Length: 477
Image (cartoon, rainbow, N blue to C red):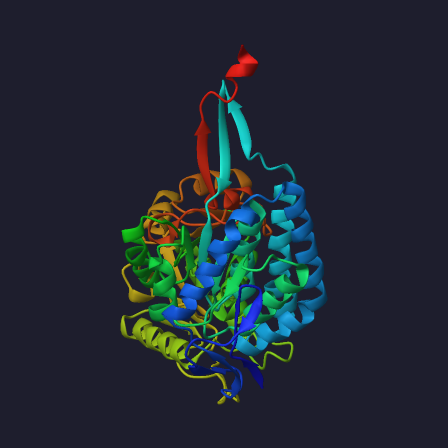
């Protein structure tokens, strides 16, 4: 059993100010997999002080020094990648293949992307005789979730280090193992003492203390919209920068001229990956009304062919992360039935033979209307809602009729899909199942958040802009 009750502060593993042990549960077995300690405000103060002390020196490091550091992080991460993938499987239930090929792989992907951006990023530019300088914002607080744990740590930490910031991380207390290994990687790579700090804890204690801390210059939060609102409230009195990547209820518009079998199959697989626990999952499938019956039959076959089982095997889906999450998903499945949606596949309860573990049936609802709860709320589980539409304008209006705007998906002929994609109110739109682009900005419209992560756009989140007027006067004379 893992014992991770220390915090990483000032380049050392230290005891918490007040011991407060928490059991971490393996969602596949419901057994205790390890223990962490929940931090306190005193631990936050110590970690922020370490980051603040390290900032002046680290902010003055050269581009070449930071390139070397990111390269060292990538090398150390590569050595530990199988171990990190195993920790992700144990803490949040991702099947082994997914943990290695996607979850852990995204960690090094973000480091390498930041490294490439750093090589050519313009921190200074002349505007007439004025120098426009982009400088590190300062001490950053990162509050990250459990669903893609290393992905959401790396996509914050890598660009922050690249731009010269120091930081304190609070990973999810539900899935904290991989974050500990991440800290070990950064230590081995030679991140300066205090440059990166980690304090475990819950949102109302450690998360809130970081958000309101007067020495924290910027807070970046990934999680639910409800929790994001609380982070923003706590941060407001100190007028710090707040970056948020929040919830989603993304629409997947299947156009009349799409390959229906391929579009429905791909859409369902995208929802079921990671057991539906992805903020950008295409959980509302919009289908031409005249093709709905055909789409239902395809959906039923795909869902029933989706294997669910132990994450140590080759199943497509493992468990969801916790009893709390399982109960929430079950309640929303029951709500879909109660509100009159047609249950095409799956439904309440656990799959046969999987009584232990937080396993959910791959579930498809059809005949859903956009006012139903399952079309409005983020379920964060393997549940898809199929909605019928009459005409592209109606589909676009339906897709945009949500408080969220994180992602969108369009399937159809390229020209029609492009025209529809332009009209979706979402931060990232995927056409015809295009592959991931780690240099493309990731973030949302409306209540899906503000700011952007990934690639060059991520750098801007960690930089202040300074105008030095008269910098070029001597040269001009």
